Image (cartoon, rainbow over all chains, first blue to last red; front, top):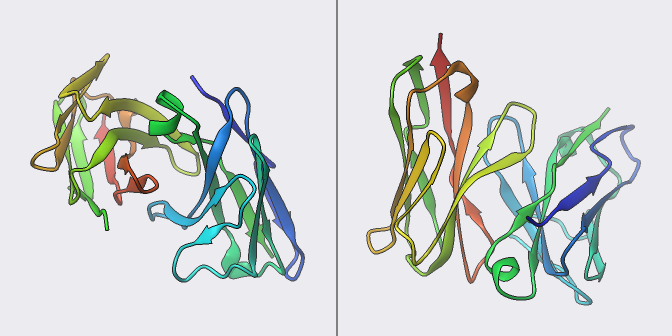
Length: 118
Length: 110
């Protein structure tokens, strides 16, 4: 099956710093990547959708200037949490969807990145 | 807008029981439906994927059914074990990104 990796898996940072999370599709080309956020004991909520080479589409209530998404290639998307604050502490999961066939009709998930902002 | 609902929100059963988790969705125009498992503090583990043209999928003690026309799916777990304790998430994908239900938190008591 398709593999999606995320790096780092854990990050602890001070309030006010920026954190970059990478998401890679390892064995398929991901035309679309999705970023989800999950707060404790809640379900996954979609933050934004990004298509390769174009600007991301953000869900209502998600600040695009705070959560910068770059999808520069068909295998890599990055999420940068700028000027992170404690309320940004969460579990961030990326997902990738491919060009055609099975890879188009299914989203493949990374293992997630746990962010703790002190 | 697609909405996914899971019932019950939490379930506690003694070991060995068979159990059913329910999922419903509002828009039947889906490509597929997936059931995931999530352990506390961990990522998602895909359990079963049912294509929109299929009615069920089986993997070991798990059986998932799909009735697209009525917007329902069930996940049947046979002979439950303490190791099955986790949150089970149902999600559907169509022309929009994958939409998750809020999950059912399952506890299997030894």
